[in-house]
Image 1: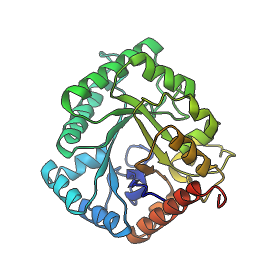
Image 2: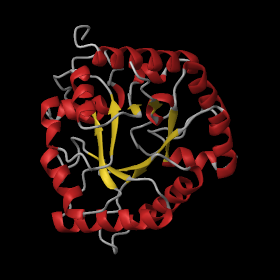
Image 3: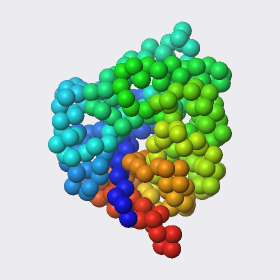
Image 4: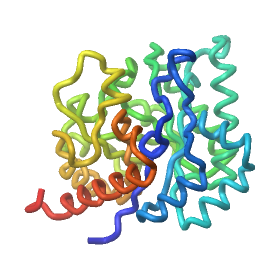
Length: 299
């Protein structure tokens, strides 16, 4: 089997950071207590080819590092694929007070994307804010145009259940098609696909020319009462759940996708592990999944 590059997404490798977005004192910080050097060293040790950084973690890292230092640590570990996330609220009207923070985060992430040569920037509507289609299409087109002026990385819109505007594959394809931005594409997470009932064969509808980024995450088909709790704390590593991940991988290969394969597993159990064990399990499970996808008999 040809080498499949694996990227340890932020929430898989951050350790005991709080992904819920709940303000203090009920919630904790979203930045990782693991140093960037330690994360990069662990990724190198287990043979990953990339890592991700969440926007709040980026702010925290820049309190002690310059962008040049972050890039040097990453490169010295032999890593090549960097994900930067997550841009939200860029779709609300200019007069909306939420735009101030959104625009500041966009400037920060785009500056880092240019300096670090990121593979892509991930965006979407985690908080499920209703937006008219025309407004969303226009905003995504403008965001992609801004990105194209500042860096070479594609902007990928993540399809997910909380998004009240883009909650199906057809709507996701429509958004990217209508925006018409060459650097605008889709981020596909197998956990979200499974929860939305999007089967592997349905991915054939995606135009091959779209920039894509894929994340592997397993789970149970039957949802828990709280989707937020399940999303942030009960996902499973590839091969540990009920979703047909090998068929998703084969379908995406059929679209011409060959990585990097992100691993995004928001799991309270995973967050409790020592950093070495966390990286070991991530690498081992993902390699086994990709091998199974390459061997239909085994899967």
